[in-house]
Structure formats: C-alpha cells, structure tokens
Length: 143
Image 1 (cartoon, rainbow, N blue to C red):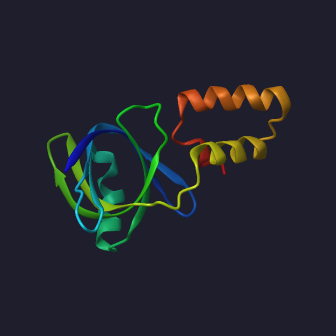
Image 2: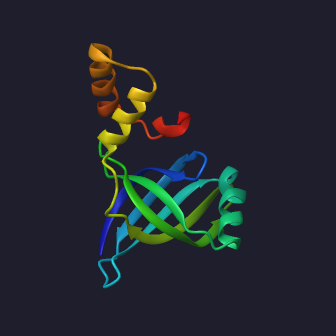
C-alpha cells in the first residue's frame, strides 16, 4: 500500500460540481488485485447530509482528487461511500473506488471552458497559463 496526502476533493454531479472543504485527508492506493483506492475525506459537518443521502441511495460518485501537491492535475475516481464517522466539529468520510483511466486531460477541460467563456488570442493564452499554474478545482461550475 502507498499513502498520499489528499489536497482537495470535488464531487461531480450531473448538474454541478461540489467542492468539499477539507480539514485534512489521505488517499491510499491499496495495490490489490482490484486496483482499489481509499480516500479519507476529513471535513466539517456541513457535508454530512450530502454524503448520507448518497450513502443511503448506494450512489456511486465521480470525484476529482488532487494528490500530494496543489499543482497536480486532479485524478478522477469512481467511488462509493463506505462510512461516515462524526466527531465534535468534524467528520471522516471514507470512500473506496477505482481510478478512472479514461479521463479527459485537465488541460483539455480547461481549454474547452475558456473557449466557451469567450477567451481568444493572447487573452486566451494568458488566462490558460494563469489557470494551469493555479489549478482551480471548480472552474467547470459555470458550465
């Protein structure tokens, strides 16, 4: 097994992207025969209802996770919620799933977004470079 720091997580729903504010987080590559990963999302209580509803419905979620450094591209995972553990001010959400290998590259998604926003020429180039460096996690929310 290999353990990494979870920098950010967002849940991709059909109609929107839900960024999860992390207090802390870990991601573990179990390196098992099923290629499973564990994501522990340590967050505030504001997300409890969101995750409990999806756990009750046994809904699989598509999440984008940034691992180790904020400059890294988000990695897409299809996960299910294993457990929700409540603490005084925080909660631990344990997710298990697989890395989605058929992902569209982050740069392609960003470029599509900027073109839809009307950027062109030098302005497009400058904005693309700026956002590639900062790696915003919710740039698709306006789509």
